[in-house]
Amino acid sequence: MIPTRIRLAPALIAAPLVLALAACEGEEGDVAEGATGPIEPVAAPEGTSWTETVTVSGEGGAVLGNPDAPLKLVEYASHTCGACAAFATQGKPELKRDYIAAGTVSIEQREVFLNTFDVVLARMIQCGPPERVHALSDEVWTNLGPIMGGVQQNPEAVQAAGELPMEQRFVRIAEVAGFLDFFAARGLSADEARMCLSDTDAVEAMVREADRLAQADEITGTPTFLLNGQRVDGPQWSAVESALQDAGARPAE
Image 1 (cartoon, helix red, strand yellow):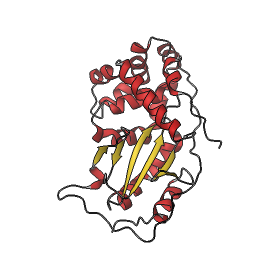
Image 2 (cartoon, one colour):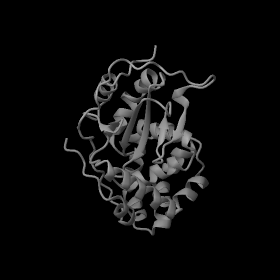
Image 3 (cartoon, one colour):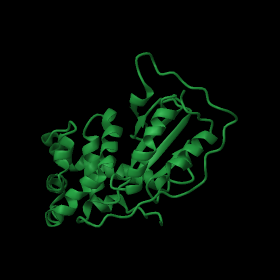
Image 4 (cartoon, one colour):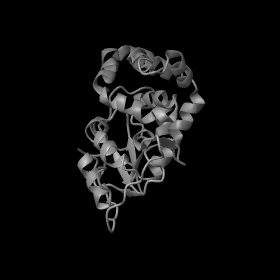
């Protein structure tokens, strides 16, 4: 599949809603350089676990794992991307159990917006504390079929919502697509979600910063992974794990 060309995000939030979802697949590139030997595990502070440790990077991304891990994985992902959902369900559990738990690897999540639904979902995810970003994102990807089913079942209402002014648009999309109910069942009340989605300044800032980072790293498809700043050779978990092991990561014992 040809990698998706990322649309200019600032134009995306100002444009009327497009119901057709873009295809997505990460691009290949140069792998990170190999290490001279295995990296020793790093113990988490007493009473904590690296798989439950989330910090915010200097770029504003949610970092899961040891913030000082020698191997820093960055994932550029879209919440409506099937390949991203496949990684979340097939690769991320192993990544957490075998590598993040060892304290040698962290993963930072960065947004890519392929369509208006990505904007709505990301804003709702970021409406809560940073500690919930990875968990809520994984919930979205695990349930991507039912979530987008709400969009497909109400196409006229969703299309009409996409024509509204920005201060109303994202709230209405979340209402008619069933996103409010999905997130309410996971701890984000409908009132909190409406407040976040109607804050157009915050939405625009989120989208513009994501666009800036994606352009700086020349991201053209999702998911795309960087390991210590170098592109991983493929979007699948097998490619990511191979790059981690080449760089010295070993599964936690």
